[in-house]
Image (cartoon, rainbow, N blue to C red; front, side, top):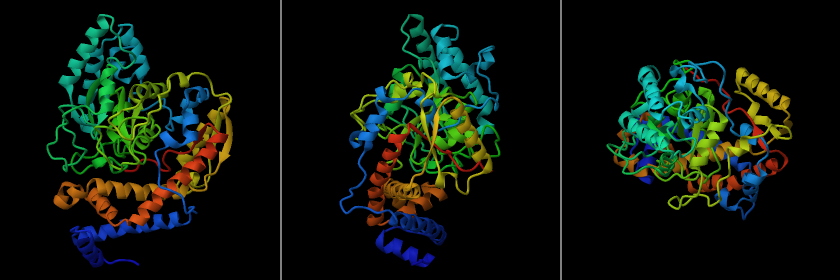
Length: 488
């Protein structure tokens, strides 16, 4: 049954104690149409009577544990598993050799680390070069919400002193990193790209930031985000739009748009993002860098603003796959302060990058992954990448997932319901603190029924099992990160 705007307002007021004005109710009605469509897709998934709700896979799903075992990681699999395009050989001042000091911001992390370890480049020099890039590009690209220049230079000086006395901590020592502004950095405001958090200043580092600092990394600032990590454009009512480094008239993807921009343009050698439904992978793809969303529970989320409890991840954005492996190696591992943290020991991700692709079984996903609205340029790029993998010795196999559409629908319902719940009090006490798009999304989430949310959760193990079956026959799955080009 289609509800009128007046019906919605009455229902929201009487059942949910949620005030809706006429404009919000009209927009909310459109969002509810998407929810109804998603519910229809889930109805087509056969669920056994005893099918329970989603359980965290890192603890209880055998195929994930087997596949993640360091001993079982196939040679070269990390290159294909990143899911993001390789750094292109052209673009916004793309330089990867330190022939001059002006090239320092553009070095891959691993290259910069080697120069620091050999004392050919100092952490202070590297930090100053990156801060100079930020100063140049803040106006045209808007990659950062806050830059912590003084703290970064102090950390770089400390790193330089430690390295000078032989206390080198490893490949992140002295490396400038950006932190998405939904992740706490001690003494720095966490805005979430919103006004809803008011004047909140983080009292302590998030666990991922603590681990980066322990590895010697230099925190350079807080990167731009779509409001409350809730969208894929990084267009932000309160902090302005972030802009694509390849074409500033286009979006950079989101919600971790600032992190993608920063890495692509030499404003950080690595950056942290978060990913609930693509928020690391989308900006990585649209900015031409590497983005990695690891297994749920692999990386701590303590000190990270919640979007959807059962879907949120923290992951790195870097210039190269090996750089992502280095950062993930520093982040991964159990955190007793995060109840959903996996107890499984982290693998040696950098070692997994060794070797070639001979014998790697690449499953090329078919069906909805390559259906409309897939842009022809995206299709051509994926086809070219597939040919490259085959030419390097990988065995290509077609894979079709029966429940791909159901997975997307379940993700929509779970995300909207959990995100709305996470902002329940704010939505009622001061809804004006949200941008219009986020307010409508949260309001629409309030209308998701318990049975719909539970159906979505019960669909997740079905999708997991299907993926598990696919990954018994292949090592990695290949598909477009996004079906469309960045739009204006």
